[in-house]
Amino acid sequence: MKIDILTIFPEMFDGFKNTSIIKRAIEKEKVIIDIHDIRKYSKDPHKRVDDYGYGGGKGMVLMPQPIFDAVDDLKTENSKVILMTPQGFKYNQKLAYDLTNEKHLILICGHYEGFDERIRTLADMEISIGDYVLTGGELPSMVIADSVVRLLDGVIEKQSHENDSFNNNLLDYPVYTKPLDFRGMKVPEVLTSGHHANIEKFRHEEALKKTKMRRPDLLERDE
Image (cartoon, helix red, strand yellow):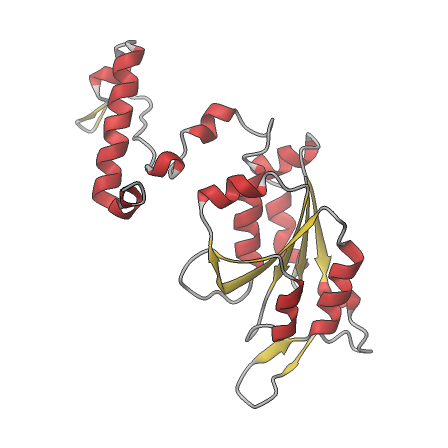
């Protein structure tokens, strides 16, 4: 998979690309992630990419020309262009799995007071990571890239993400490690029993219990 991210703050992605699972996925050639400075596509002599919006109002708006030219430069017949915006489809685990089937993602990070409405015509999809507003689309683009890359074959063990929260509309079951007794809080005996059927039953029951308590809306999706 290839992921191209368009941003006016490329330096924000230095740590993202060079740590943990993302770094290893790049080194193992499971994914190529390139960060593109939108300013490099600006035809303004001062490399401006924003201006005041028509009709008044506070805040600067991203201009269409640099972003259109960037997408024209990067897009292929296999590309899926995604716009990061609080007005987009709310992101979830199913969509993360769906995006793993794409060969090339182009993620556009909005900023300031938003972007020229005509930029929407470039997008195959608009995505929001939640009902709140951030200063820009950089963090959401990292969220999407991270959630997709970890699902790619060979990045992490398949069993690790098959048991993730939100798979089968359930939150993840509780997990424990050493010591067996920490400040009076003990690891459930069933987990040390070696009885795999009982362990699986316990984990499913605990996942169901946790979901009913914290996210009952997930269970309602199956009704």
